[in-house]
Image (tube, rainbow, N blue to C red):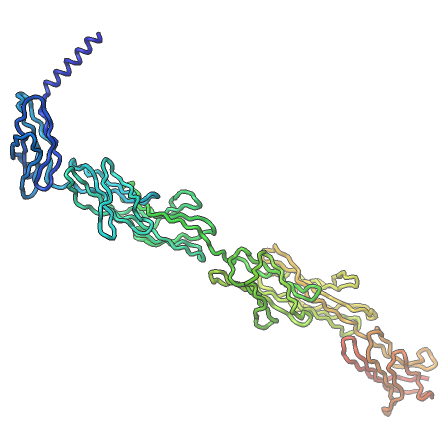
Length: 572
C-alpha cells in the first residue's frame, strides 16, 4: 500500500509539471536612466534563442517588442526615450510547446515616494518609521536627517520599516527626517513631506512653584494633529497623561510642584484618525522649591518676674528665609528695628525672645516680626502690645489699679485676672472681668504697713480657640497711703489731755510737722514728732479755753507732700 501511494504521488507530480511547463523570464532588476538591467534565468527545456524586451509608453497601453537580444551574456540594454517608459522581459528558448512567462512590468520612473508614519523621541534616540510604498522596485529605504550642512543620508534600511537614529540630538533641538525608497540600481524616490520631532524645553520657577513648558508642535502628518498632551512622571514613575492642551498652544505650566521631587515631563501628539502617537524629548527636573514662609505669628508678649518682656513667636523654621527682623516701638509710635536675626536664624518653629531693654513699669511696648524669603516675598506677623499696670493709693486702705487694654491682632481676649501678690509669693485673685472697666479698687486694711504688689493676667487665645496663653503685665507695687485722724477738741487733764494726730501707718509717715496758732496767727506750739503732742500750754503755762488753729504737713510714701489745716477747741 505504501509503494502504491509513492508511485501515485510521483505520477501526479510528473503529470502536473508537464501540463503546466513554462519558460521562466529573466529577473528584471532595475532601470537606471535609459538603461535596463536584468539577471538571466536558465531554462533547461531547450536552446537559448534571445532575451525579448517589450515596451509601452503607458502602463495600460499596448506593449510591442522593442528588441531581441541573442547574446545570453548581455544583461543590459540602453533605450533612449522621452517621458515614461514601461517594460517587461521574456526568455525565448527553443522549447516547442512551452509558454514563455513575462517578467514583472517595470517603468523608468523612480521608486514611489515613501510616506513617513512618525518620528518620535525615545531614550536611545529618535525612532523613524514609515509606511511600505508598495513599489515592487523598492529594495530598501534611505533615511535622511536635516543638519547644519544640509539634508544628508544617515543610513539605508533593508527589510524593515523603521530605524532608530542613535546619533540624533533631539534633547537639544527638533530633528527633521525624510525617507526615500531605493531600487536595485540605486535610484531613489522623490522626497515626500518631512516629519519634525517635537522638542520640549522647561524652566523651573522655584519661587512660584511651577515648571514652564515650551515646545514646537509636531509637523508632517497629512491628516493633521488630533490632540497634544502633557505626560508626567513623578519620582521615577513612568510617564502618564497629565492634561491636554490646545492644538496651537506651545506654552503651558505645571503648577504646584513640591520640594525635592523629580518631575519628568514630555509632550505627546496624536495623528488625526489614526492611533499614531509621538513623544517629544523627556526632561527631568529635580525641584528645589523655595519653601515659603507660611507662618509668622507672635503668640504672646508677657512681662516676666525680672521686668523683662518675653516675646513668644512661631514660624516655619524650614522656610528659606533671607532676612528676619523683630521690630519694636512704644505705644502709638513708629516701629523700628530692634533685632536682626538674619545671621542667626532660629532652627525651631517656636521661639522665645527676651527684651531686657525695657521699662515695663512706665511704658507700653509693641512688637511685630517681619521676614523676607529667598524669593523676595515679604511677610509681617501680627502686632502685640505689652500690658502696663499702675497702682496708687489716694486714700488710706484703698489701692487703685489701672491697666492698659489687651491689644494683639489675631488674638482674642478671654478675660482679665487681677492678682495681689502675697508676701510668700502666692497670688490672690482680687478681680476678674472680660472687658471694661480697666480698673479696680482693692480695699485693704488702712493699718497694714506692708507694700502691696499686683499683677494683671490677660488670658487670650487664637481664632481657633486652640492656643490659650497668659500675657502678664508688669508687677505694680505701692506703699500704703498714710491716713491721719486729727481731733477737733481736747480737754487737758481729761481723757484727751494732749492734742496730736493719729496715723494709720506711722512707719510710713515722713517729714512730719505740726504747728499750733492762736487767733492772731502767732505760733504757740510746734512738733516734728508724731508722738509729741500739745498739752494746751505755752511756755509751761495753761492757755485759756477757746478756738486755736493747726497746720500739719508730712510726706506720703510715694513722695507726695500733704498739708492739713483746721481749728481745734481747747476745753477746760
